[in-house]
Length: 76
Image 1 (tube, rainbow, N blue to C red):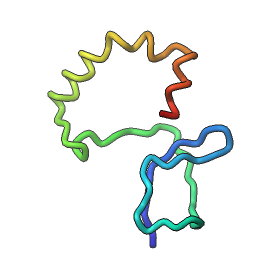
Image 2: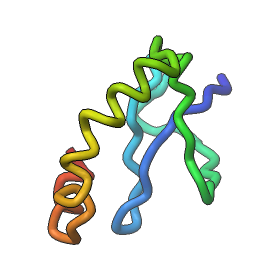
Image 3: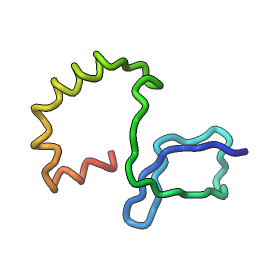
Image 4: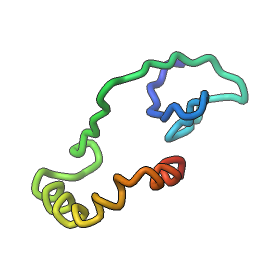
């Protein structure tokens, strides 16, 4: 089996954002660290107009999200 799954490296561990059905209790993996992770919005059913609207509506929260203490929510 070969499948690419996105994840987050934190505190020496990799947390997968999804679990492949083919994965077992123990499974070999390859981990590649990327510098800049982008999200393909079209793959998620979001067009440019919807993305701009969402970005505009969420911008009011940006200052709060960027506060250091908010990193605690990254694992959720």
